[in-house]
Length: 359
Image (tube, rainbow, N blue to C red):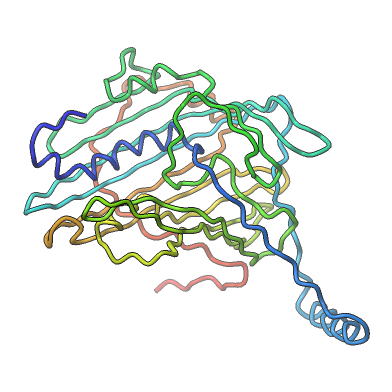
């Protein structure tokens, strides 16, 4: 990127946010995760255990036994999965009385081709590729940059790199049924924006509604003096409910290291994700993932500085009918001016909550 003025240089954080919109959708799933294993606690023994079990059975009979569900990947060799990814952001930056807004929207259509399934271990291998991209972005008063790979022959400079790789294999991934990635082969540079890996980390054993598990992670930032800061964090998951054969799993980011510097916090706004996954229990795969951001920080570059980052990302499994609709693209259709996002927090009703009454 060419820095054209001192103001542009000082407003760089929101331009980095715009670049990440393209990178997240094109390189989704390139970050690594570590899995936190939970230990089961053994129950009481002998006569006391008999009495406890009898009491538990009476309670279960009165309240209904809690069902457990096997949430694990079960892909089939030769299977092809298509995903539609939409990522939309708006960033507002203010420094020294100068305010600038930037908006971006990227849609991609990507494909998983399952090449191998080990029937004895359950391990699966797939290759992924991006088949199409539609992108729009606008920074301040600049003219919007538009690109639609299905209607445009020459891509603008900012989208030229990804345009050259459309339809090509981006990576080859081997993973376990619980989502743990065993091997990743790719010629592309891995970039982690903490939107989650290409697979979802799951418990190794069947679980009941209400079960929680964590995935440890770490962030890197820098303070106002330019010194690097390492932050410990974790991704928190919770099995919320089951509805019509679909399991709803929420997730959120927690930073465990205390943050006292506004500058440090401004560098990790994109990593503070919240969202949920819809998991098809019978098919053994996710059919939808929603992520949203709504973060702000003041005083990160002077007393009057302000940075707000709002966005959402949706990953949806696309069936053959929807693929046919995607193929019939209207050539006159493109992105128009995108208004700044106003995203309300995602609130999923739990399995034991009553519906909220509207006034």
